[in-house]
Each structure stands twice: as C-alpha cells, then as structure tokens.
Image (cartoon, rainbow, N blue to C red; front, side, top):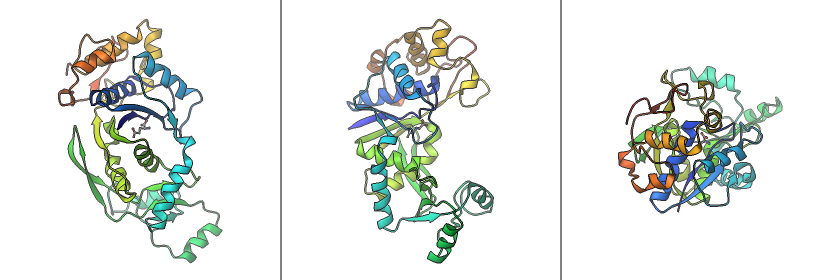
Length: 302
Ligand code: GLU
C-alpha cells in the first residue's frame, strides 16, 4: 500500500507545500508504505511547473516510487467512474451558472456554499430546454445524505457536509473531488497526508469512495504554514520557495533543516535522519508561522 503527495502544478512549491510533502513522505516511509507523486493538472497549470516541483522535492532529499502520474493522462479512468455512478442513478446534469449558484446559495438552506439543488429534479423537458439555450451541463452527484464522518489521525473523528458536488465540470473536465478519489483507489493509496485546508472536503470524498465501492483511505491532515499576519503562506509573502531561498545563499539541506526544526527535530538535514525519530503523535498541532523576510527559523517552537 502507498502514501502520496499530489501537488497542483500551478507554480513553484513554497515552504508550506514542501513541508506537507515532507510529512507525507515521513508518514509513508515510517509505515513501510510506498510513496507516490501525482501531478494534479486538471486545472491551474503553469508550463514547466511540474518538472520544477519534482526537482525541488528531490533537492530536499525526498524520493518516490515510479511512475509519476499526471491526472490529465487518466481521463478514461474518471469517465469510467462517472459512468458507474450514472448507471446507479447517482448523478444529474446541472445547468446553473456560477453566478446563479452564488445567488441561490445565499438563501437560507444547507451549509455555506452548498449547492442548493436547483437542477436536481428537472424534468427531461426542462433539461432539454436548457440544452437548447446552449447552456453547458456540469454533472453533479445526487447525494443521499448531507453529512458524512471520517477519522483523521490528527483530528480524530471529523464530521462534515456532503452536498451535490460537481463530478464533471461544464467544460467536460472531471472535477478534483472525483479524480482524487478514483486515483487514490487506483494507485492503492491507503494513506492520505495533506494540508488541513482540505479537511472540510474529506467527508464528501470519503462518501464518494463509498458510493463507488472503493476503500476509504486513512487520513492525516497536517497544519499549514502561515505568514506573520496569520494567513496561509503564499508566494507574495517573499522568499518562500526553495529557489528563492537558494538565491539568498541557503542550501537545500539548510532549508530541509528549517522544515525539520519546525517539526520538532532540530539538527536534521536529511529526510532519512528525520525518519528515525518520527512519531505522528508528537507532531506539532499548531500551524508554523514563518517570517520569510527574517531568518528561516520557526518563529515559535513547537
Ligand atoms: N492537488 C491538491 C493541492 O495541491 C492536493 C490534493 C490532495 O492532496 O488530495 O492542493
């Protein structure tokens, strides 16, 4: 069985992404799992970014098991899952524009941002009328419940909203929530380690896996890296990528050392050294606050 890191190739990885990748590697390797990389390139692709991401992960000392797959090469797999869900009556076409959904979602039903179900019960005739208007159809899940619980290694039991999420976008591209579920099962990934900004999406992914008859992986949602204003670290915060740090004279081993220190392991400068003492239960549960304009040091000790 395998763990994985699944970056979106929208630009260079910043220290928060590298730290999450390192954690995913540590969780996988410390439990004897394989470690896979998956390029999530169904949207927001910057040319050359995937290759640079791999180079940066290798530079800080991570290794992975081939092949590296890209979601854009796997479209038939997602369509097969969509076909199965549709055959079982779990999907419907949705003709709403983004604007219509935003306006409707402010109405007082369902959790914030949940799709209000406008197209859920359209008749065949109503659907045809919308097609005739030239409206592109997205495909949505016909969810049979509104909440689903998962277990997370760091967060314990987590219960969250499930709505009629998009499975295939109006432009024909499979949606992230579907692709991730199909890929994790297909790649025998039973351990999902990623940033805790994705925790709220996890119940719907686990529900989708269950509907498809696929196993639900073990989850560990790890704290993010924040800037000094307490916001999620971003490129605009300064010298936050490995290449930025190298331009300031730091070596990849030093950058790895800072990431290690933020995880409570001062003095390590390779992932292998970190592996020796790695215990998920001892991980800091708080975000790491980073001042990229100062020295690359954790501003608060875990
Ligand atoms: N591609 C997603 C991201 O870069 C991660 C998805 C996942 O780990 O499930 O935010």
